[in-house]
Length: 184
Image 1: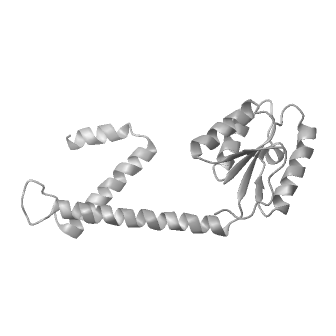
Image 2 (image 1 turned 180 degrees about the vertical axis):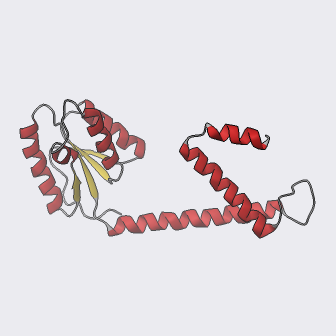
Image 3 (image 1 turned 90 degrees about the vertical axis):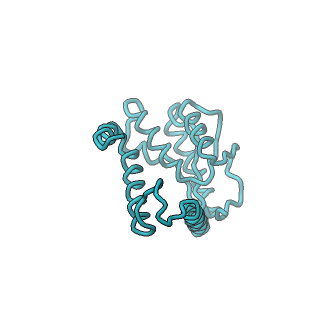
């Protein structure tokens, strides 16, 4: 590709794609500083296979370090439990049930994440349902487990599907299991 073709192609990239290309360009530049110019068809003493092996090993080390960091952070924080429960058919009655469920979760040492109790304070169920579901899924993404109560409604089904995609376990039941404790 010519430089003009590269610029033209990148103009149609999404922001994340542009960041990926920028990271690649930065890495090529750092490699040139560390190992010398990139002249693949010229034998200038560079051992591309050895360089690639070293870079791949470095990558594995950094990934392992990040995984350990994530595990350590999860051990230090309370288990986050997403409460998946019907809401729309009886907001007042379901609010009372959700408050009781959340209380049991807290008594057992975990953090309840219960969007209906929070979002119902400032979002309108009828007109802002799509936004509410988007916010629910965002909160669910940071949870360790989902507790599902009752038969899934349309919104609950979307939450359960999202949890499945993220590999977040789902526990079904009448009340939260006890004791909850910290995540491992």
